[in-house]
Amino acid sequence: MNTTTAIYVAFLVPMGIAIVAFLEVRRRSRVGKLPAGRQPLLVSQQDLPPDDLDELLANISMSAAEYDGWFKDRQTVEGALEGFAETVGVWVTEGLAGSQDVVDAATECIAQGLETPSLLMLASLYRGESWWTVRPLVEGSLAELGLPVLESPTYWQMRAVKLMCREYLMNEITARQLTRWAYTCISYAGLAEAQDLVALDDWFDDSNHVDEAELRTRSFATLWLRHTSAQA
Image 1 (cartoon, rainbow, N blue to C red):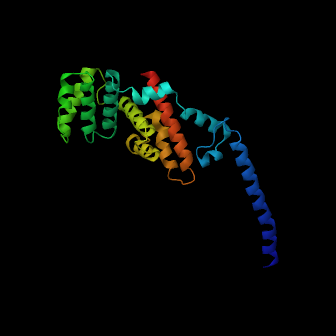
Image 2: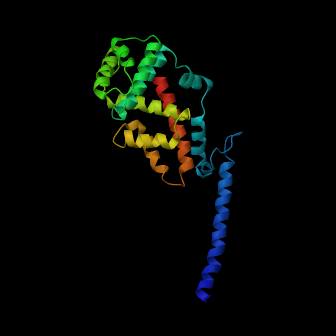
Image 3: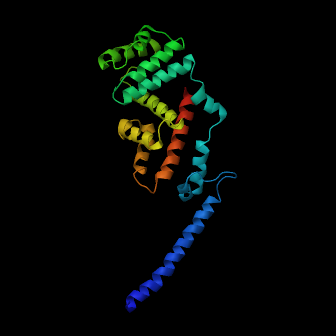
């Protein structure tokens, strides 16, 4: 080892140790600022600014009333109508691909006593009916129910995001599946209010941000249901 190398080693090694020690102290100080009784849900939360962490943790908590309203009280006329609108929203946002979910949602409307001529015909369709058969009945159902026409992308994307957020919070899909759906179907050219969700898909591509992306996705989904339910 020559003199120059020895000098570099003597200088850089202590500096590296000091930096590691400083980061560990900083990490522990952040964990200590968590609200009383709450522990980090994910390791990378320790790397978030304290205020940001507190806000995210507050966002993902839901009351019993919110839980009942979002996930339990669905077997009513209002719940069936909302479910139909959200399902049509996903159908429109995904490019009118497939139809069975729309038919099933129409069937639920009939079961809850919400009957219109087009809904009855839509609910009676067999699995795998063609787009040419399904679309006119969906359009007729929307008109009979007083819902916007299919060519209303903002309205339907809002509905679609609500359904997908609900499915995520019910553990029917993963956070990555939710953000990938948003990136693919909403895209950066789509609904302005959903751009944070679209952007989170890129976070999952970086292994250093996966845990933080999970937390931010859950925060987004909870807030989306909270805000859209309050507006309903």
